Amino acid sequence: MTTARPGPMPTKAGETTRENPWPVRALAQRMTEYIAKAPPAWIEGQIAQVSVRGNQAYLTLRDPSVDMSISVNCHRAVLEDLPGRSAEGARVVVRGRFGYWAKRGSLAFQVDEMHPLGLGELLVRLERLRKLLAAEGLTSPALKKALPFLPKVVGLVTGRASAAESDVLANARARWPAVRFRIENAAVQGSLAVTQVIEALQRLDADPEVEVIVLARGGGSTEDLLPFSDETLCRAVVHCRTPVVSAIGHEPDHPIVDDVADVRCSTPTDAGKRVVPDADAERRSVEMWRGRGRRALVGWVSTETARLSRLTSAAVLADPFGPLQARSNDVGRLLDRSRRVVTAVLDRGERDLAHRRAQLAALGPAATLARGYAVVQAVGPDGGHVLRETADAPAGTDLRIRVADGAVLATSRGRETDGATTNGTGTGLGADSSHGKDTAR
Image (cartoon, one colour):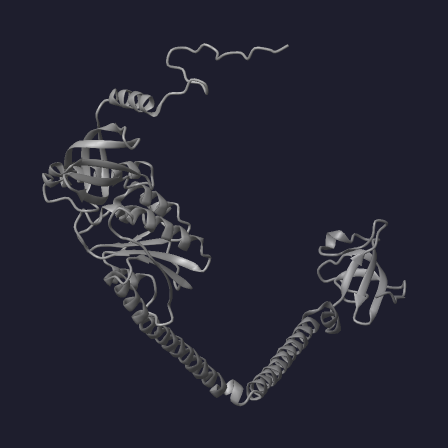
């Protein structure tokens, strides 16, 4: 028994299968119809390659910022009508649409209009980009890295065998003959300039020995310097960890890479002078500081020597014991003088004391008694008192009479009358001294 083989499955209109494929002409027809529906477009690019064959011109338009290109073709007359005759590296704006060439199965962008990108429009775009980078802070002085005083290796990105390379090398080696360079040659204009310069920067930035990178190019027209105003290149310079010196063109030239670089030099010659110090100037500076140090040291030594001479020539150091001896003599003289003064004061005091004693002896009661006077006291129960009046010693009063060698006791017989005979001691009082002598003092 045999089983019937199933037939092809039914398909939708226009759908293909292995059993129901399209012929090449059907696909080509549909591609032609589909691509023909696309509207025309204006695109901008840089002419990287031109080839004219017969009445057709074949060009490669490259994006100036990234490694991307597209093939276009146009009638020869369209290319010849371009003002100034187009050359490789020129930036143009073209209008066209995609077309599908069914015979070869290729896709091409057919150009029907081509216009050069005017300088005025380029400058406006560059100014817009300059403001954009400034607004992002990429041109801020705070981001600028300082150049090393004496770099181990200087990286140099420039055109092969260019005048800019010679200027940088000659001026740097004239200032510091031992300077070392690592040179990366790259296209500095044209469609490949941006890509090659960025790759060279990245290689040098990755080298740990390279401490500064110089981006140098000689002068040229504004169009020639356009790669150094490319946004991608400017951002690559900002992201470099190694300080970058921009030396593009001459003094009036000012590409945008000058704004984002760490140091801007007006010319490659100036860059060669900035990256390394001047050996002669540094030698002169060292000699100057050495001379100043020598003069300062000599002056200090001279000052200290003169001071030491003054100190050693002083009398106190010439005869160190002389001042001590002089002070000792002064102390001795003052001591003798003090002794004499003290002795004189004591002698004078003794004389004054003796004089006072003599005065006291002459004026004292004992001396008066010795001259024949006596002191009469009335003796009573409450003690004795010196008689000053006769009324103090009425008759019968006990008396004590003190004389020079002692005292005697007596009794008063009353006041003496005029013409009466006195008896006793002659004291003017009638006294009976029969009581005897009082030896008390």
